[in-house]
Length: 268
Image (tube, helix red, strand yellow):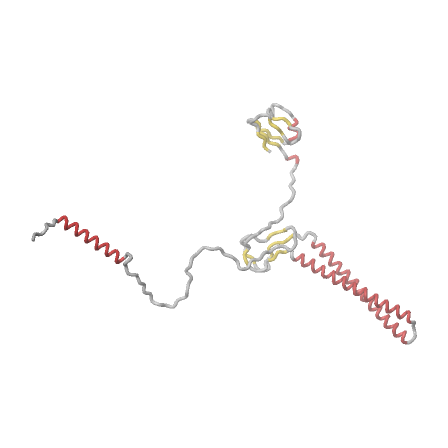
């Protein structure tokens, strides 16, 4: 039986293929799907737990206070801005009291007047009560008539009614005074708790009117390449000078102008 001749080149190729197969098998067994699962051995120790979770989110307050006036009005001043840290009881702003102070002083005068009226009514009631008891004793001794006793009793009833009415007036005046004081104190916007200002939806009221001096007004116009500026517009536009304004002529209204050239532009 004869053997097949094997060349060196064939042996070299076979050797390379065997080496590649062995390398692929090693890689598959070590780092591929057939590789064993790595096990990390750690010594058990007692430690404090620390959060290691990371994420992105929005900070939301559990308690949100909406601070504002209880009655419509104009904001007088602001003491804080967005992002400022405030304490409980700190004044954030104040509303314009307008005539609250005047009405408060007027109501205090009303309370004092009712107090004086109450003192007078109390004295009258005490006098009427004394007179009624005196005439009752006189009537028991047959020293006065029944008509006079009835008149004194009626005076006592009238004094008691007047005293009751004055007391009601004083109570109402004091209630109105307390309401005015509460309204005046509510004009100060106070922080109910310590925290951070997150938004501000109001600002001090701006002026409602604007004014300008009539002598400082002017009209600036440009006709072609020649700019024209006047300080006294009405008088200037009445001067229909073709040399100064070759393409402009005065309109029917003062402070307005029209240009006859197509490249003429008017600027306010």
